[in-house]
Amino acid sequence: MQSLERPHVLMMSEITVDGKLTLKKGTSSKILMKYMDHATELLLHETRAKCDAIMVGSNTIKIDNSFLTVRYVTGKSPLRVIPSGRADIPQDANVLGPDAPTVIAVAENAPRENVRRLEEKGVTIIRAGQDRVDLPRLMHILKTEFGVHTMMIEGGPTLNWHMLHYRLVDEIRLIHLPFIVGGADTPSLVGGMHIDSEKEMISLRLKNHYMCGTNLVTEYDVLYPDAEAGPEE
Ligand SMILES: NC(=O)c1ccc[n+]([C@@H]2O[C@H](COP(=O)([O-])OP(=O)(O)OC[C@H]3O[C@@H](n4cnc5c(N)ncnc54)[C@H](OP(=O)(O)O)[C@@H]3O)[C@@H](O)[C@H]2O)c1
Image (cartoon, rainbow, N blue to C red; front, side, top):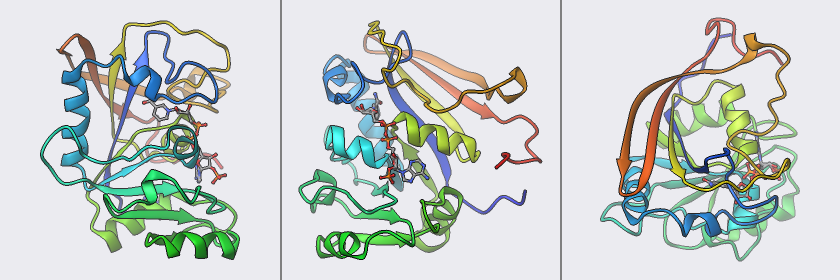
């Protein structure tokens, strides 16, 4: 598979000891985020300020109503990128506000009325993919047409899995929160994987670990198996 030119991508997440991103399915991760040390909130916002763009899945926007801006440190807010196949981002979503530029990536067949409503909010629409957002294509457009060289993704698990599946993630940085929340269907770092054999495991190389305030932070490079072959469709 020929890989398209794309931004360097960092996946960053707050995560419990049992690998969960929130208290239970359908609840906002903002509840967990209240327990981050202030030093790691600063780290998160410093990382945002260093990136050209930040991306989260449309369901995170619906549940968390994130701003995705730089607030706790001095710096420029990155371009906000939300993949939403049907362009059904709520009209009152914070990410549609004026605090930073926003791109909504939609499928070619997204309902026109939804797209029009988003355009009225002043966001930029990227069409990539026929029935669903084609993430490799989106990454290529962001690099070549929007000058995005570095991008962070902040979940949720559905987007995280698809980005890993298409080998679009280069690094992972985790903020470990000292809690266990349990729950078989509670969102964890990566959803939808269901691998059949160890050959499909995605290997990581731990490259750094440190305390940031009272939170452990770990940093990994992503090592995809058989990098030449690309993902199976
Ligand atoms: N702790 C943390 O760091 C953290 C961070 C973020 C989120 N969260 C939590 O994660 C949960 C939400 O996660 P989630 O897995 O339900 O949703 P998600 O990953 O935020 O969003 C997934 C949605 O994105 C849209 N999308 C469009 N194109 C896509 C593509 N090519 N690949 C993948 N997704 C695409 C799809 O909706 P359409 O079909 O409408 O296009 C898809 O259902 C919330 O509870 C939130 O609080 C936690």
